[in-house]
Length: 276
Image 1: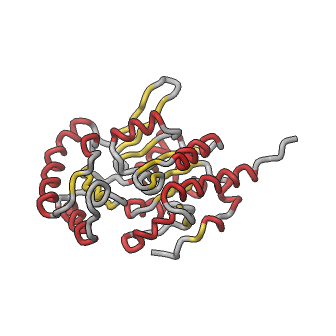
Image 2: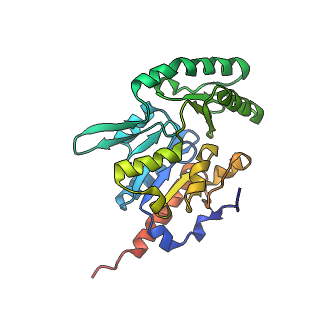
Image 3: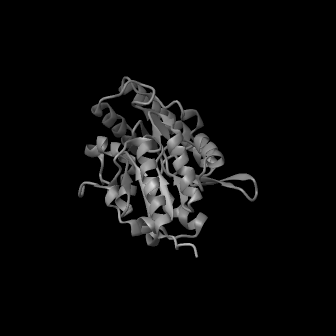
């Protein structure tokens, strides 16, 4: 798994000043107790005002991402664990989206998703479809602690196993198990988005990017980015993480995200040329 994360207080200020893009998970990274705090939202806005690109990368559904791309101070949003990305085209006044599957293929998969859902609900008492399932296009989200009483680890593992037996890709977030029929993940689609949308090679630029997250479905991002950051609650999932982030905040959830944002902005300001 690698070394324990180091506190972001030790993050090189020169490296922090060079960061141009912040990718962030949403649940329990930007949010706290299921809510987006004013502190975390203000941190998003402050990052953009400081000149950084901001992109949430989330397991949340298309319906949420439509709102996020339109209303939040972000440059784009990757949703449903990498099934698409959306952005608001300010010059045209329109929401834009890039999907990895077309509408016909999504319709073909709907019955298979429904069959897996029914089997999970029969075999894992206490779980439920996520309440945001109605606005998902690609995946099945099974709630194990957002709107249901928290399930035991063995029950979560059983949900994952049932999805994988059906041929699905399955990932555990801090609140849901997400499953989908497709090979994408957060990292693969973020790489594609950076090339197509922003004309950047993520492999070449990864040292100048930060990803911040908190849960097992963030592990590919933690492994890829040399300066990946976990908010303090990432250690709640230590036993389920295939890779740990390089850095960790002192605070949990949205307060941890705001802590990271302050550090990046202060480093950027400190490196700016003095006015003449």
